[in-house]
Amino acid sequence: MSNSAERVGLTCPVCSPETAVAHEVLAPGGQATVRCTDCQHVHKTRLPDPETIERTVIVSQDGDSTRTTVEAPMEEALAVGEEFIVDTEEAILTVRITSLEIDTEARAESAPVPEIETIWTRVVDNVRTDVTLHPSDGRHDTTRSIEMYVPGDYEFTVGEEEKAGEDRFVVTGLQVREDARGYGFEKLDHDGDMAFAKDLKRVYAHEESSPTTAWSGW
Image (cartoon, one colour):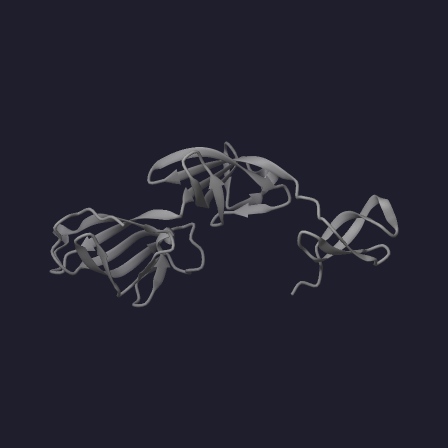
């Protein structure tokens, strides 16, 4: 637990009813409990809304991109890999930050909101997962790719069987995206290794049966 409470500037009904002074936030909420740092008086009040600034967001999905905006708190910082919700003309989407544009010449992994010009993102609600299928007979000349469209939190696990349309296969490897966090490795290939679809660049697998189609859906 942190030893320092959040501090905000507020008027104090006891010692400073007209001028804002520093207060510690003891309990946040609609009516927050705060303590004046000058006279130690504890009282309830509504905290001021954080100052925000409009920032451009580029939303990418399956090769297509759209532009929208968000109101971001001035005092916050953003980083590649973080997720948030955006409202586009088509839908309300959950997106993940893939890059932060500081100016037309520079990109950053993290930056304070006021320094950011454009937030580049990709949709992670529902994602396309590319799967490379190796035939069960080991012939590399017949290796092929299929696509799966699944929820972003769908789990792929090395060693487990999956089905996509008429294709059945066993996962042998998972290639993790650069913007994914918490995996430690770019390639997962041990039985039991798991990754979410939204974190994957590609799935590698061995076919379990002869396919009748190369297309896969939900």
